[in-house]
Image (cartoon, rainbow, N blue to C red):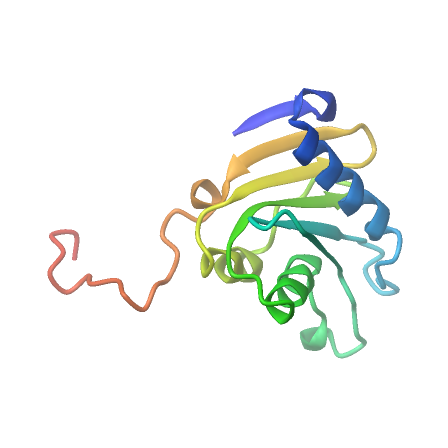
Length: 144
């Protein structure tokens, strides 16, 4: 994983981070006060946004990453290059979001700490190395 300033990223990734930071302002987080913005870059070049939306019934809360993924899927997208996540702390996607994103393959993950612009850049398979797949055949594996 690479920690680096946003100005060392590609132009496309820098724009993705800016989009995530802007949409973060629209997050609905009255309970945790933990606002998250996500921008998902499809291979088509289109960007899909999402924010976290909390609910007083906490299990109904939806993460920004899954909201962005839902918007992309609704638009017919199935292949993605990168996702940028903006928070005050630079948090990475939660486990549920990692698994949902992994359904669509490996992609670049950029987590930005809004307070100082630091970016943690990695690949999804680095933060979720053994994602669940229906096609996994562990029965014949020597590791079981």
